[in-house]
Image (cartoon, rainbow, N blue to C red; front, side):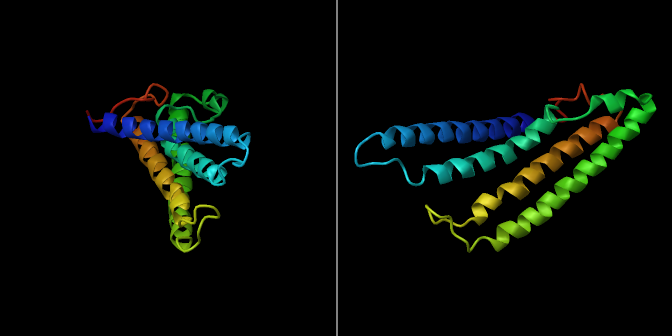
Length: 165
């Protein structure tokens, strides 16, 4: 149940970000043709920040559904036991990267709360907060997948598998 709520929430936020990017971009483009308007001065800024948030929110789901880029050819070179250890190595590298993203993303977020965005003049820390949030979502999904592999599950078949319902 919580799994579904988590997934649905992230999917809705990603879809809202995408729809808002398209709608704002379309309206701003149309208004450029209206005499005396010249478009929405803040549209490009909102589109850029929505895109950043959309990518980092979706990054956790890309791990869950196994759509991140990976080289399967390397896995096929090893026997089953070797593939398992190769997965553990991949998980260790991913977890290290995600912890670095969370740590430095948090620092950048805190340090940039005083800096204001150009057009809308809101704290840039809100934009940079996508880094630790996305890193946390990726870390959660990596640990989830590592747990499935640790219990003897197939990581390729684990895409979208629910741990607790």
